[in-house]
Image (tube, rainbow, N blue to C red; front, side, top):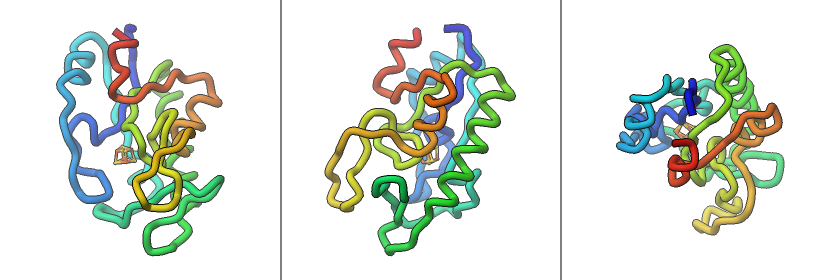
Length: 144
Ligand code: SF4
């Protein structure tokens, strides 16, 4: 893989997660030695503050733990992330697993009980629909 590759900003250590944390992933930094990484945080791009209440997908909606419907912010963030991916000609993305934005393949089920179900986060879904290969951080090796 030559890149550039879109990446979840929290995976390169940016403290943009809902709880104000982020963690540098060594495998991703290694990937960054071989190709250009383009970091994005869709939830920040959608206008949400950090920290923020955790949210989960409930079908096509996204609702936070306080019961607020935050779908529009998630959609805006996904569109911005797609725009950036296309601008930089990214053909692949490494995204944070289980997130209601970035999760790829498995996300929480909307009950806030830490139960996983099949599905993509809002951004992962939009990227895939536009032909971008999306993998979670545990699958980075598939891009090497
Ligand atoms: Fe990380 Fe994505 Fe959540 Fe931003 S939206 S904190 S990049 S998982």
